Length: 45
Image 1 (cartoon, rainbow, N blue to C red):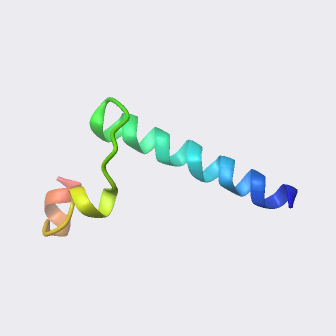
Image 2 (image 1 turned 180 degrees about the horizontal axis):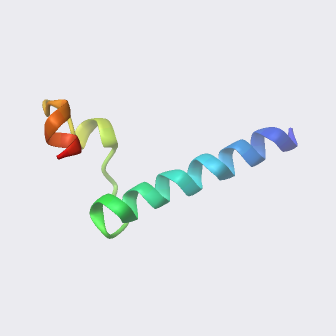
């Protein structure tokens, strides 16, 4: 059970870091909804 909690905490920290890195704030948007229809070079570049 403890491993699941640790894994959840690591996932949450990564998700929050991504939100700050990409949006400069926390949003309610999901990554797959925001980037839907974009090609890979638009995401990277």
